Image 1: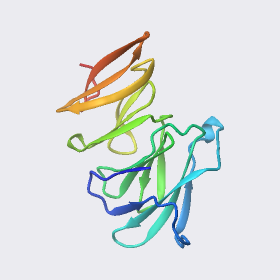
Image 2: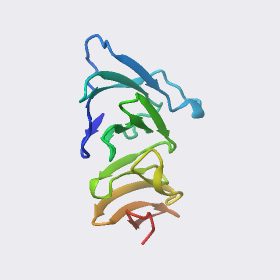
Image 3: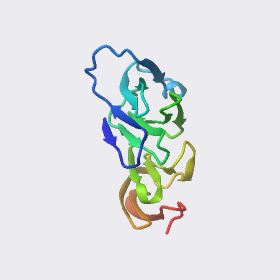
Image 4: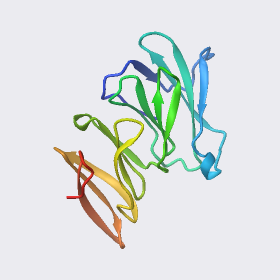
Length: 179
């Protein structure tokens, strides 16, 4: 599990699997029910609120373990973005609840603080999130293997297969428009 702390937050995250007795509230989050792929395996992530208190979120793992696994701070200091084996959750750390990000499987995610966004890629689609709802999305941008290469100024460069060829595309990070 990768930890990315780029935005200021009101919490600290710990993903150490060798915790002693938890003692905190444990909240499970499931993402694979709509695909009928429950595995019974979870990542345990402990959230420590800087104001005091902690809790453990259990984030369901999918059956394929090659997808993105990360925890990101978000533009809202009380929220986190957790990606567990390709399933995304927008977590309200104070309220101990989450909104599921409705794109599966997440294959890549990067933070752009300048644009107050987390850019998320699936094999075919691209999304920008700064809250639980996508700011913009590009669906079926590629036929397969969509990858984020870089962000330079306000231009996002991605590559993906289109009609059997690997194609480079440029996108305005603010609007989601192809350039």
